[in-house]
Length: 206
Length: 321
Image (cartoon, rainbow over all chains, first blue to last red; front, side):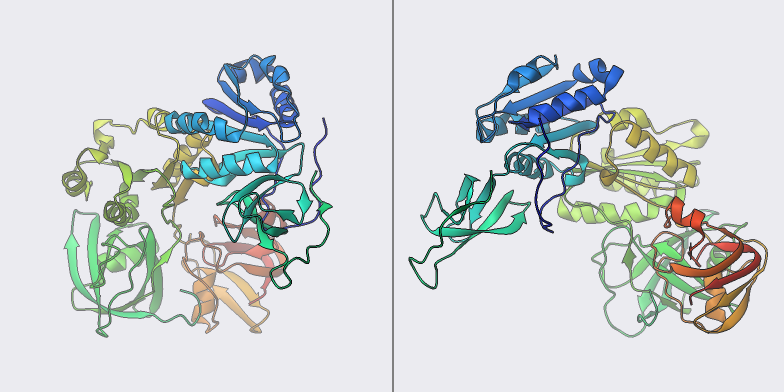
């Protein structure tokens, strides 16, 4: 499994790293799709401390937007808890419960797509931890989570630019402008001045 | 404050001796304007004219951050120090005119936290007094663990206890009470931020233990003002001002530059804030880096110096000032 290359430099996009095992009283890992590979690598990096780490590890996993489901590889690790959900919205209540019950010293790791990591970071920040306290590693699909600036609806897994808002139907240009608060990119109407003149959609995100 | 920033003209309204070591001072403005409000953890630099020697020491504000009628600080007398705290104790009387800087905060609360764990040692209690007032106004959760030598020296212990009840925990060294740090670090809800102010050894102990227990550095906050250490006199060439000055044994490089009429930037005067960072053009000898600001690599390279606390010994030091 390969690390994905995120093209270009964008000031608003968080910088993703490589997951490193850190000492802590418990470990919480949230991953999707190809992120499973990063979790396997993380455990490998823990070396002989891996069994002790896994005994206090809770993994929440969901398939990626491209359908990749490597949950079996995570189950095989033997963590104290490994839980598979359908998508982030079904994982979120569990994550919030875990964060609500947790104590300082918990190490949080998230890996996979940007949409997943952004939402995990947002929910962890809401729990009072700074974003820097969470380790991230990008793996897999580069599809974007985009908020329509007009109707505020969020469209998941956007592949093309422009695309049509799944809420209000406007044709939106995907700006390289990321909001940590929303965990989404900004989408702006592309044919506001000349209604109907929509350039052909290009597949920018895979 | 840094060069050119306006000072606040004040008069000493009240001096209270809390115990043989600690006095509290209240300053009110002489120009009739309201004091600026501040945030808990902020400090002011108090200017003293000690028989021709200008002393400028940072002290944490402990009054209510929203009180615009005056500022309060507490000063612990340091008999072995350079003289600032002795001057405050021996010469500052009610009615005296002085100058203070605007408040600067290098030890602010992170208000995104769900809970604030405050750990104080000795006179390190003062910034927390203002922080607790602010947290109480905001209705945020906090608990204070305050370690002090003895009940006689626990200046604000009873007062804080009566104000905040079981959110305040006091530990007396002479009764062998110890802050149960390991348990404290173990049981804090996610989203807690930790703040520590006190002696150097205590800060290192608390921060080191917290990091070892898996607390991320972004959730840990500390403040320690260094008094400029005394040492041997040394000579410094100021390249930009084309002057060569001698720094006296009890003087800091920053103070020597100011005495020579060089307008050098500063903020905390205690090695913490980074404002006075100065490039070194030439260094034949070694710099005694006493600050908390420069990285170990920067210190080793001898290309930067913090004139507020650092000294030099050797043949030649040329700095860009």
